[in-house]
Length: 222
Ligand code: PGA
Image 1: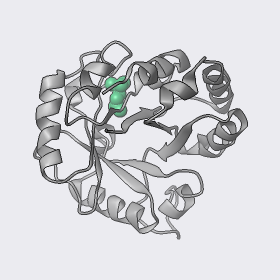
Image 2: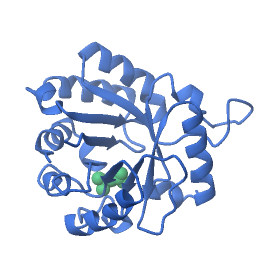
Image 3: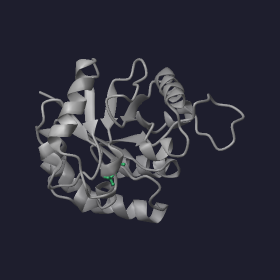
């Protein structure tokens, strides 16, 4: 049986006050723990909220782990503005790498490979975002997220059949965990997670609202 992964990507949203509210609200959702059973819920807040999020997960005893949205291609050192894998490791187990929004800011396949290498060196699990079958996946990467650009933040998700076709290709190349992202919501999530090659989803917009995020978790099934 597959473990369904739900990876919430907050992107550049939320202040600390809003983060406290989000956790307070999601902690009130009834039966959340039973909905999470056999699933892996990974929340990716922006870096400045990781410490607070980690404390709130503890405080409310939530069945979530944390991921970062990016990692420096450099080690600890004189790299102003960068956050190294070792620093993230205090709080997170996973890191998104090569999101299309970052690729649009100039992140190349080489940088994605460097970042994946750094992440793996410190024991973080890279989740490499890909746009299609021709996006290279760096060596040793075990999780990919197929995120077609037309589907991101548009309300216009790809079809489950298309996503299955692309992710089946990566499964065939030995990638253990294959995720779909792009306008995932509580209504369409099961159509993706029930596909044989799709192991989970990566909601952005619908991770921002605690009740929608909880509904995505609840509705996701194989
Ligand atoms: P969306 O974002 O759910 O708002 O489409 C997905 C993503 O970019 O990770």
